[in-house]
Image (cartoon, rainbow, N blue to C red; front, side, top):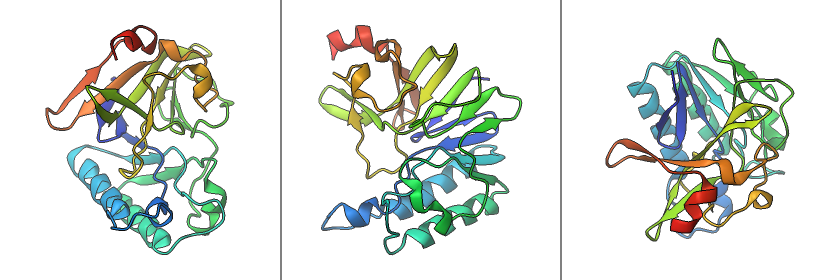
Length: 228
């Protein structure tokens, strides 16, 4: 069964994977008016778990924004994420990202550097370092991809078939709605941070249109740039 793309996350069988929550971004971004991004994260997670048959939730790194502190409200926001998973009967796993230096202060649950999904030959990790496990598919975050179409920037997924050691690579957008994303339209391989992106031209942008409720798949970046 192929991936199901929904609201900046991906569903693989009975596993929901999301990345780059960046809890504390709102407190450190100098926004004058609170946009409630952390409350929205919990609500959106709950909506996904209400709508789909999910057994486990895997966070592919960068739960936190700050490297050296826990801004007010971050601990309680993560606790609500935990509670949401528990209330829906889901196991929660975190694969730490490069921002998650202080994750131990929040989370004493499963936190492997990479997590292999059962019966799926898929490995989830943040993507700032190379995986040790061979797999048919790698699901990562880290680069916060977004694509600009007709003047509108939208969060997107990037899928590279056979892109790393013969396995597919799926890059997720940041789940935090306050993270606008990095515009990929003119980016080359050297502009990406994840070492799993060895040839950016071969990656296809994918957009979940929540208004039309459909998945839009585009040609690989190498050929798409001429039309963007």
